Amino acid sequence: MLFSEILGLEHIKNHLISTADRGRIPHAQLFVGSHGSGTLPMAIAYAQYILCGNQNGENTEGNIACNSKLNKLSHPDLHFAFPIATTEKIKSKPLCDNFIGEWREFVLTNPYFSLFDWYKKLGIEKKQGKIGNDEALEIIKKLSIKSYEGGYKILIIWQAEKMNASSANKLLKLIEEPPEKTLIILIVENESQLLQTIRSRCQILRFPPLGETVIADALKKKTDPTKAGIIARQANGSYAAALHLLENAENNQQFEKWFITWVRTAFRSKGNKSAIMSLLSWSEEIAKTNRETQKSFLLYCTDFFRQAMLTNYGAKKLVYLAPQTDNFSLQKFAPFVHAGNIFEIQKELQEAIFHIERNINGKIVFTDLSIKLTRLLHKKE
Image 1 (spheres, helix red, strand yellow):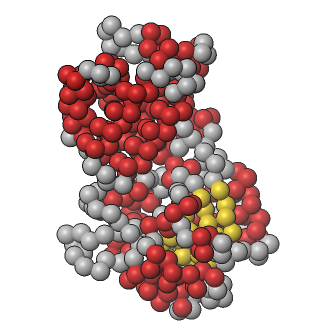
Image 2 (image 1 turned 45 degrees about the vertical axis):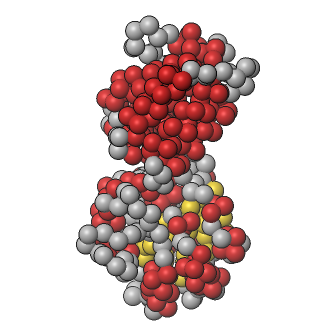
Image 3 (image 1 turned 30 degrees about the vertical axis):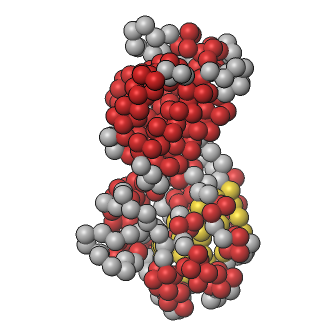
């Protein structure tokens, strides 16, 4: 994978390249950031740069055969660990090697994917994937063997927070004192979910959200510039979110209908039993859709509320949303979204997205969110 294929993050690219060029490679590194910020493609490009002895800041001028293997993610000294679960094919004690073909195909197609995307690929959306004890033992076994090509051995643990306590403790000694010329890169979205004892043994590199311009420029290869700019603003620094928004652009009309029904019903629900029943019915309707649709809708709601707040405070140049629903005016809705409730609304939406990604029952998530919205919409500034 080329560094030039990774969106933005020039300061991180330069840091990793310079440390590799100087031979100052920490043996355990922790990449912290959302999947949409580019942690995984950066880790792969960095691994390729080291394994192939590449030069001049790019993966093109080293060992040709090595680069060819890395471009297919098939280099024998590059290992991966990622969350898995039993499937129809692997009914017990699954290992990452059982799914390495699917992993390579998925990463090479789009390295900016989410945990739910990966579960969907494996057909385990309704299960909780993990990096368990059997995988930990397999990792220890792999890294105890000499490298095939006489250089580094590199392990990338994606979604390392999915290690259970037992497997994390098994790998603790390895992370603290790995064999010579061994590099372990742990990738996490939520740093606090990783054992403190592991975090303390890693050099931490935090990935910021991507800039709107960076995302918009990437999207212009897939859609027209106007739509690319709008989606880039909605994506909140995540290229993965931008791709989902682009794929679901045709759903926006349905999302708008759901949203307006939702906020109108929530506003009427305070002390109104029939409206509360309507809100429960609405929650049940949304819960019947697949989880990716639910997540995309929540991202749409996040943006809608933000646009309403900007409208309320007169930031017209930043407002691009133009609802098409009859008898609904963004200007009339905007006063109900203000400094007194916007932060709580956004927090509740983000928590709902978090729960949907982790397979919490959709009806429970949307019912809870709706009840909270009823209170927040009536909150005074």
